[in-house]
Amino acid sequence: MENRRFVLASRPDGLPRPENFRLESGPVPTPADGQILVRNVYLGVDPGLRPALADAHTGDEVDDEFEPIPLGELVGYFDAGIVERSRHPGFAPGDWVTGMLKWQEYGVLDGAAARKLPPELPPSTGLGVLGIPGLSAYFGLLELGAAQKGETVLVTSAAGTVGSIAGQIAALRGCRVLGTAGTDEKCRRLREEFGFAAAVNYRTEKNLAAAIRLAAPEGVDVLFDNVGTRMVSDILPLMRPFGRIVACGQIADYGVPPEQLPGLRNTNRFITHRLTLRGLFVHDFAESFPRALAELSEWAGAGLLRCHEDIETGFERLPAAFAQLFTGENAGRKLVKIDERDRDGH
Ligand SMILES: NC(=O)c1ccc[n+]([C@@H]2O[C@H](COP(=O)([O-])OP(=O)(O)OC[C@H]3O[C@@H](n4cnc5c(N)ncnc54)[C@H](OP(=O)(O)O)[C@@H]3O)[C@@H](O)[C@H]2O)c1
Image (tube, rainbow, N blue to C red):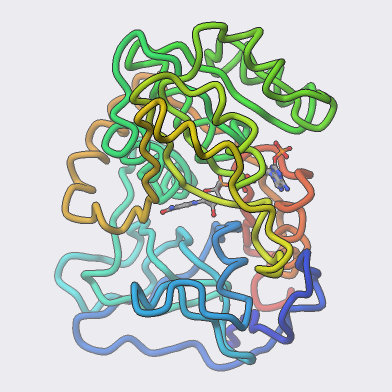
């Protein structure tokens, strides 16, 4: 049995392209004691992979996760699949699990690095509401953003996976939620399906701050940012006293050479309005994941928290699906599904 996998062929120059990845094939790995062999079914396509494709160190001494991926190495992030063989007492063949299996058909995980998915929810939920995106939204909004009932929360890239979940959690907490997104259809979905009070199309709106001010004349208490410095600079003058900015992602800045980054403007507002900006690294909250997952599962089970999924079928689609994230062609959680006909090239 063959195991197809994507490795890094070249480092992207600006936007990633499918040619940056190479399809290879090798043997299916064998689990050691304490490990499980997982057959991947839903593969995660995540913008957070982009910084690791660059050759510059971005996180330096802070965490290995920010180290660049060497050329020729397996790429990818978290996936969801079915246990094929188990040498760990906590898992049995047939269990659905999620873990960092990366872009390959079969992968081995240590038992401690795998998490069983609840049978009562679709397994793809394990990569959305019950995955790293849901956890990032939860801890970013509630711990770093400390969003309180009655406050105004603004989410950028709000129709994306993390953004849409953060907005829904804010609405559940009794906040007034605004969002930015790149198409009118995404803005419509935010208002009509995800409970946002207002949504602004940042691509067509000439004056973003003025459009947001119209929707929130009282200003913004929590800015949950997934986009980066240019948008944060535009929104800074709208921040209310003691406002909190959560730097979750910088998708507009990934791959931009440091000398071309726009830099932060309007920073005097930090002093005059006692603002804070905190960077989120979701794995810092790993010890509290079980508590968050219990609450997220409850909301998802009750139909209060959803994630729009954008699923393609076919393992070979992974590189093209990844490129779509940076042009906004994806609509929600981008996943690639491997079905049985696709597996092993059939
Ligand atoms: N800090 C952490 O621990 C952590 C954990 C997970 C994810 N993240 C970060 O969170 C962010 C969101 O992740 P996600 O999984 O929600 O992504 P996603 O669902 O894949 O959404 C990506 C969306 O970003 C928007 N976008 C792309 N390029 C843009 C640009 N130049 N300017 C403005 N918007 C742009 C597009 O929507 P539009 O149509 O609206 O443009 C695109 O659909 C990413 O930056 C990711 O790296 C951080």
